[in-house]
Image (cartoon, rainbow, N blue to C red):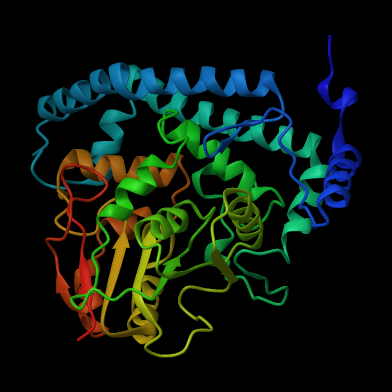
Amino acid sequence: MLNRRALFSGSVATAMAASSLSKATGKEVPLDFDPRGTIGVFERLPSLQVESELEFITGYRSWMATSLYRQASKRSLDLLRLNGIDLSKDGDLDEIVGILTEDHTISMVVHNLERSQEQFWKLVKDECDRNADVLLEEMADAENRKPGRLLLNKDLDVPDYACYEIHIQPGGYVGDRFAGHIYFYGTSVVLAGGNQQDQLQVNWARGVPRPADGKVKRILDQGTSCGQFAHALKGRFPEAEVWGNDVAGPMLRFAHMNSLKLGKDINYVHELSEKTQFPDDYFDIVTSNLLIHEVPGEKIKEISAEAYRTLRPGGVYYPLDSYSGDQVRGTAMSHYNAWRNYRWNHEVWWMEYYHYDLAQAMREVGFKVDENGPKGRSDTTRNVIGYKV
């Protein structure tokens, strides 16, 4: 069987190719390890075997999340009705969990979704570890290159709340050197293969409102992760200087490297979203995508306060998450689903987030709040918008 890495493998071959091109053009060429090329913005995995296994899991989870999950949801509602549960209210969580976890169909769906999730995380992590030499060299080579800047802080005191393995991702965001790679490829599976061109982030970025005066010179993407939303923001506001911050150094190293490959002029800084390096009144827009539900409630307020401090008068704060506006909650099923996400998907702060009044927290730090912003991440939610007046 052909071994592609044996034929043209690792950091030596990659460095030789970059060195040859540098000599030919007179320009320094960054390392670029993509042995199987890219499809649009999506860089294919080094191994066809791992790629095909991930595609199988993607298809399986897509079927689980549609056909079988719908049946399990209908069965859940039937069981709750039969047991006298008022479906329009939160109800007693212990009672609801006790009823639903005893059912084989419901338990099978939950079990298979979580075990398949563990499987695809492991597949990507193992593939990264097999190619560790060249992947680490590629990220190191990109660190001081432009466009954009990568400002890492080796002395950053990472808080305990950021050290959990959220989504049961091995090592979490800060504990594995390839956390960015693992998250990038893993979430493609979670999203049922429907985001390989960052189309979801592009769509969500369309909803980010401009300030009333229309001026957008600087944008901050809080908790930028792999930088996909930052890319979308740059596409939506090409005139703006875009910054992304995150507590996770491995995420930022991947984000910066990926931005270079895509020719995106984006700046990344290694810091806490609740304690940034930026001066007062610096940004026109501060936004985030899926950050709020991954921090404790007191940190949500601190993050909102920091957004207020760093926004200019007239600036816009737009924290995008699973629900942040008129989320339809307070039902027995939404209560159970919040618990399921907390218990089995290791969303440590989800139960707190489920009951959190983001709009009120934003008002308390000074924002004028519109709770009926653009449609959120689902058809049943609206996004909260904060204006600094």
